[in-house]
Length: 267
Ligand SMILES: C[S@@+](CC[C@H](N)C(=O)[O-])C[C@H]1O[C@@H](n2cnc3c(N)ncnc32)[C@H](O)[C@@H]1O
Image 1 (tube, helix red, strand yellow):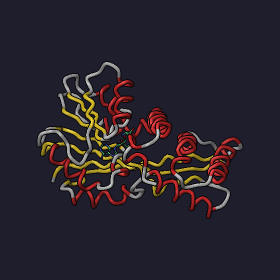
Image 2 (spheres, helix red, strand yellow):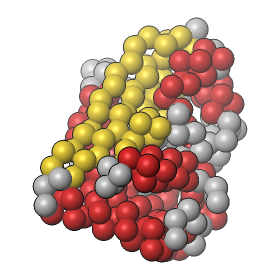
Image 3 (cartoon, protein in one colour):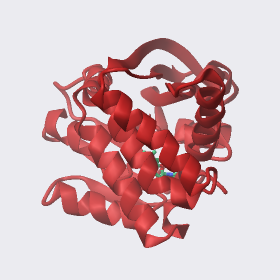
């Protein structure tokens, strides 16, 4: 079963709804939105910029950019899913954001058009990240800034009663939800291959011990998606999520995962 985020429009309506709910839910989480705010803070605010949020989904990052960019900035949110873009436009209401329906491998923008391009949890979901990075480089100004944020899915863990179950389910879930669960580990190489210089990076871990919050809502998100991912039987999925809920209730919850932000410029 392919990663549903690779082509959301090909999914059942209930799966698209589950994805939209999850994207908005995690976007509202204080720890997650703080990581977005941190890299957004690196963009200059005193002059107008032309900015692209590529793989914008329901527009969590695009709306955050809209709040802080110079009033004369031009802001594009672009995605391969017309369903997610429709929701993004609805949530943003009347705004300056231009919503573009496209596939990131062939961008309909002139060379050197953008001052900054953001890819927020896009590259872990695309079959060929180097092509997308290279196409983004074409439309990025020579002094422009690329910001790639992604989850190191390969490090995400939801503790179960025994380590074997933990390892097994972690692997199944992260492999089903991301085409490249290890994208962060490969990004220094991929950026170089696509013609960028990596100028800085940042990493954060969201870890929850005793009680769950971010990862508990991720479990709830998975519970809505698991039936369509086809990786666990209903009984296995139920046992997995029940353990996470019960460990939250009795104060023995453990889940953690790392997130990376890469800052790069054309080399
Ligand atoms: C995990 S979601 C992230 C959405 C948003 N950036 C966020 O963090 O809330 C991945 C997004 O990438 C989009 N996507 C996947 N492949 C794409 C492609 N080839 N071109 C453009 N967008 C793509 C999906 O439709 C989805 O909206």
